Amino acid sequence: MKLSFQTESTSLNVDIHTLIIAGWAGRDIAAIEHHIEELAALGIQRPSAVPLYYRVSSNQLTQSSAVQVLGGESSGEVETFVFNAGGELYVSIASDHTDRKLEAHSVAFSKQACVKPVASAAWKLADVADYWDELVIRSWIKEDGKEVLYQEGTLASLRTPQDLIARFTDGKQILPEGCGMTCGTVGAIGGIRPATSFTMELFDPRRQRALRHSYEAEILAEVA
Image 1 (cartoon, helix red, strand yellow):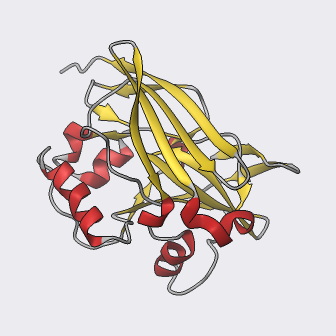
Image 2 (cartoon, one colour):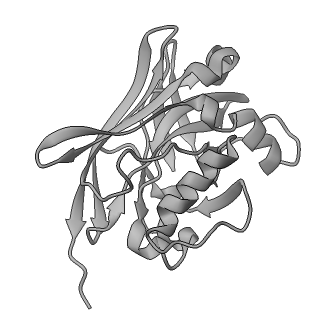
């Protein structure tokens, strides 16, 4: 899937052919358990390993502000998104939009069932690596016509991209060219629930800047 990103100094055109969703990526075991319990309340089985790397078709990536989903049981999750472009790692944000009803049957299939919206801006990972833990991810949904804070937390609660990459590549410090990886999420405020409007943000408090993306999900009717 070809994606275009704007950085502070240049434009990037990247062909992502391998998409990895890093699940259960928290550093804090208690936080991981909290998220597992959130999903268990929806009937979703515990993971077989922590962290766990799901493969999703790269053509599920999109930078559109309008997506389509089947049925009304899906929801977004803000995650950092790291990728290799020209031998250098960059970071953006993505939503691991997931069908929660299908997730109770198979997490892997539920992730494949929904597109993964990605922002159109990115930073060099090296520019924020030294203070990675200070970065904040947030998301908002609309409920009853009002925007509501849905997720918020610093990246200190999640494994670093370098850690996740090393575990996935058997010790290497960089993803292969054309590979993109989402790096985990934080818990939902008030519990996981579906929403058709989703806004996500990666905030850099030192430089007072943010990567941000919003999208609307059109619900397609389930027919039998």
